Length: 564
Ligand SMILES: *[C@@H]1O[C@H](CO)[C@@H](O)[C@H](O)[C@H]1NC(C)=O
Ligand SMILES: *[C@@H]1O[C@H](CO)[C@@H](O)[C@H](O)[C@H]1NC(C)=O
Ligand SMILES: *[C@@H]1O[C@H](CO)[C@@H](O)[C@H](O)[C@H]1NC(C)=O
Ligand SMILES: *[C@@H]1O[C@H](CO)[C@@H](O)[C@H](O)[C@H]1NC(C)=O
Ligand SMILES: *[C@@H]1O[C@H](CO)[C@@H](O)[C@H](O)[C@H]1NC(C)=O
Ligand SMILES: *[C@@H]1O[C@H](CO)[C@@H](O)[C@H](O)[C@H]1NC(C)=O
Ligand SMILES: *[C@@H]1O[C@H](CO)[C@@H](O)[C@H](O)[C@H]1NC(C)=O
Ligand SMILES: *[C@@H]1O[C@H](CO)[C@@H](O)[C@H](O)[C@H]1NC(C)=O
Ligand SMILES: *[C@@H]1O[C@H](CO)[C@@H](O)[C@H](O)[C@H]1NC(C)=O
Image 1 (cartoon, rainbow, N blue to C red):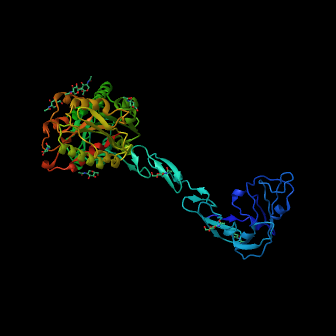
Image 2 (cartoon, protein in one colour):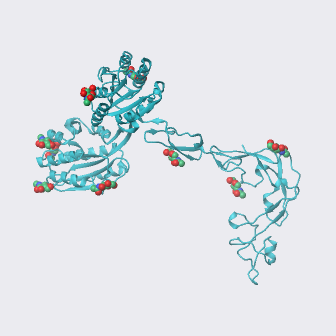
Image 3 (cartoon, protein in one colour):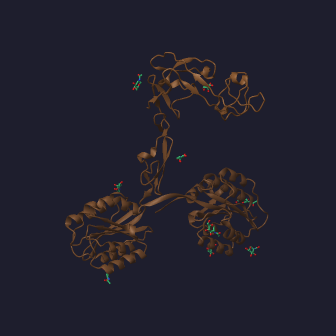
């Protein structure tokens, strides 16, 4: 709500209205006065009578009795006030805006005093009459100020969480979130702990008191409570160390939360020296027992410098060389920062807390280090279509149907899946490259007009062509995208030369999917072509399999990757 003051009503008896009018101001002249052109400058001069009569001061060129096209109309109007009711003010009536005719005074509510359709409140605000001198504005959402001319800065309340950048807009704001966060306010953490093997090393040295030792164990328990424990998720091992390292339990000892938590409760305090090197060595043994291809972490909790400092650094290096991530957590004032840095995989994997009670404060930081950010990824897909006489007509049409179906389930676009089609018989040719189509519909139209060649296939030539020309920058293939070849053929006439080229493609990281149609498909060859057995599809009437089985390819071509 805003309260304003009407200046005009201040003046006791007269209100001067001076209009230095310009034509573009949409002021209409009384009927019969046909003055055209722009009116911009102020002139003093002799006015021809009829100009004067019209209330116009005009300048005429030399002796021509004609109004110049550039004129200034100056109106000096005198308001003869009339008494108005309490809540209204005296103003000019609309009709009498035109001087020098006499004009009438009218009483109007203050909100209407600027004339019809002229609001006192900006940006769509509504005006409320208070009395003859005051009014207020109700602003639409997003605006504030006496007359609603101030855009509210919605960013002022810092709505973006997790270091998101805020951008103000009308009655709204937009947060630009750091990589791992999402959502209107960057409140969604896309970061999840993926499958991992995690070994905790717990300092049981003499410098620890039993109570502090228990606080380290609580820290591990808090961690365990936030993740899923299991053979396919997170596996945890705990090693305590003083003179010796004791593997309290290894990665596979426990397969659910509750038994891990119970096992941690059973760990005893065994005071001694600080042989961190021995603990790191034991961690390596424990990790080597796991054959899972997952991320591996060692989290070292210590409150002082180790007794075997050279061996500690050496053992840490062995772990790091093996691809293990080491997080070093130093507790209290006795820690040797340099040693923690030497142990940890990276400087930002070193955490220090002032005492054991502060351990819980770094729980989320540790959690976010162990987490993985998942992103949607897309692929560049090359359809490799056997259009030779090696496939018969029904097989060829089956292949076209599969392409239609596959294309319909993919999200095709410049920043989505890109698709190119290479057709071959004796000679290969690019029917369209990765840049040509940005929608499934457009692309699907092209399949219906494809035809076969009455010529044998040269598979080696086709595959070599794909190897050299299939995924080039010029064809619109993108760096860093998954590159997939969908090979539609029956495999019958493929020779060993062609197999070699297939290997070249696979070695380059291309993923090969093989799709065969009908009864003459050579299953062994197509299985051999495909990158994995489940990437071979056999379709056709007698197989009782239709194109819907290809839906499983969507997950291969539009997938999630998780990494940090
Ligand atoms: C005021 O608004 C009304 C309705 O929108 C319109 O018909 C009328 O022409 C406007 N008057 C002026 C002077 O703009
Ligand atoms: C008009 O309203 C304002 C605000 O409510 C008040 O301060 C002022 O005294 C009033 N004036 C008259 C003339 O009533
Ligand atoms: C804010 O984000 C929305 C949705 O992404 C978008 O439509 C809008 O244009 C953005 N506004 C600004 C000011 O960036
Ligand atoms: C493990 O702990 C998490 C978090 O408390 C919980 O959501 C999950 O259900 C637990 N799983 C089992 C098997 O107890
Ligand atoms: C380092 O520690 C490991 C494990 O305790 C031990 O086997 C090894 O002998 C130590 N090496 C040196 C040089 O002390
Ligand atoms: C197939 O193409 C290769 C070149 O890639 C060529 O050396 C070979 O002779 C061709 N085979 C036939 C049967 O034409
Ligand atoms: C393709 O383009 C990328 C960058 O756009 C460039 O780094 C790369 O060298 C190019 N590759 C070829 C073969 O031109
Ligand atoms: C084409 O192959 C299908 C089975 O895949 C077979 O039924 C049909 O007879 C073949 N047609 C010709 C003309 O060879
Ligand atoms: C399978 O492929 C390998 C090379 O990738 C080749 O040596 C082998 O001969 C192929 N087997 C068949 C049955 O085609």
